[in-house]
Amino acid sequence: MTRLPQCSLCHGDLIMSVVMPESDAESWPLRLELCAACDSGDVARPAAGILLQFFADGAGRDEARAEEAAFLVLAWMRECMAAHRPGPGRDRD
Ligand SMILES: [Zn+2]
Image (tube, rainbow, N blue to C red; front, side):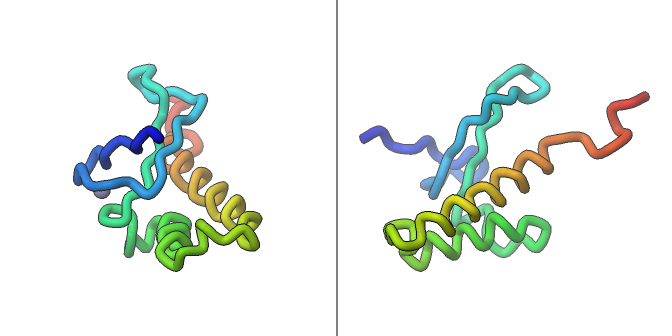
């Protein structure tokens, strides 16, 4: 089993790491990180907090909650990508 990379902010263990097909401004693939230390308690990122709580409860190992996991991961990815994208109108000048 390959270990996840360390958190790029605090160098702690990541809960989840996702590489997106999109690239950032420097043409590096966008890598989304979910870190218990960096991503909890941020009111601006509710999906990250909910997903962390989901894994903290051990629900990530519960087959019966797989559908819920998929929904929460998708919400978290959307939240991350929204933070990466310029807002409407900002790329038009
Ligand atoms: Zn971190």
